Length: 458
Image 1 (spheres, rainbow, N blue to C red):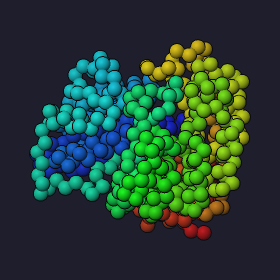
Image 2 (cartoon, rainbow, N blue to C red):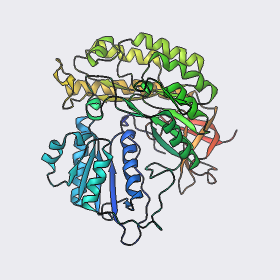
Image 3 (cartoon, one colour):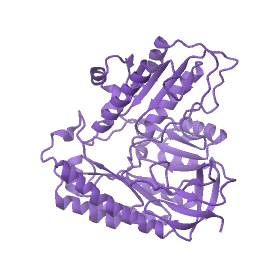
Image 4 (spheres, rainbow, N blue to C red):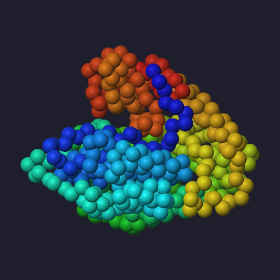
């Protein structure tokens, strides 16, 4: 049984899964969705609008009248991946509309692929629809083209991403997301809760709460109360926790008020899981990143979270090889990781990104040094993960089933595992009766570096 690789990209969403059957003559659009879960939600919104207008969704190029490529512009490597995907779509289909974060740089895209039909920026849904209309006019049949109650989803039916805000007010020097997606713009809490209710009614068992900065949710709305729901992350988490599904919080900055979420986790309203982008631990590196430089205080917060909710799982991402990072600063990061004992860790080697202020910083780290530090960092993170998972052998854990293959082996996740970016728990025997979305109790028999194996029941 394969295990999760240590270099799994923490910025990537699960692979989009499209299952649609076109009626004869129905206009059909293909979708390639790259980047993070927030971009996947944008793709779902675009496809939901298109389905409502009578378009079918094609899982391949050959069956589509045109293809939308939703791009990522987070790193230069992600930009290259996006250009490659656009080129592949052009070669296979020829009629391509580009949207997403890289769409904020239309000259860059058109310079590489001048034959694309249109380029739009992130969350510009109306412009995407206009471009599709210009290439493939809609031809709806209201008696046949029924839209699912929960809209078009690109994830398995039992879990769904729930975007609560757009944009970000931070000014991290290495990041251009605020330039592409703008400042924080929170959705009204009642609208988020209503969407969540509809998803749960449609069979979703796990809600994955996402944004650029989940902790800041509602700041721009001055935490206003509207229709009985207050726009504050603690109140929203409590409201979502009443719906009967697992609620998992992603991209949570460690502001002081995050400690108010921990009792909700201890009560079982919200999964005991926090995804927090710490990025580094040395105060000088954090200052050069233009991020809060209080790593020691963060260790105190982590200890308090674990005191109040012993089962909490902590995931984070880090950057190694940031401009000016010395060996001593990197060693501080390793020592901090030893002290923090995080459960799930992803790591990037620093890359310049066009438009990022960090490009102009002095003392850029050589590529071979970045690679060496990344390897050393991941070796330590893997050792911590291996020890933590070994301690779970013999425990009884709740898991959610993601897939049961033809051999009757179930791929599941514990409450400490988000889809595709964290580990899995495999049931090798007696899982034939399980189905995706089932939540069952498993006794852990075996542990690896990133994954667990177990059996149903005691």
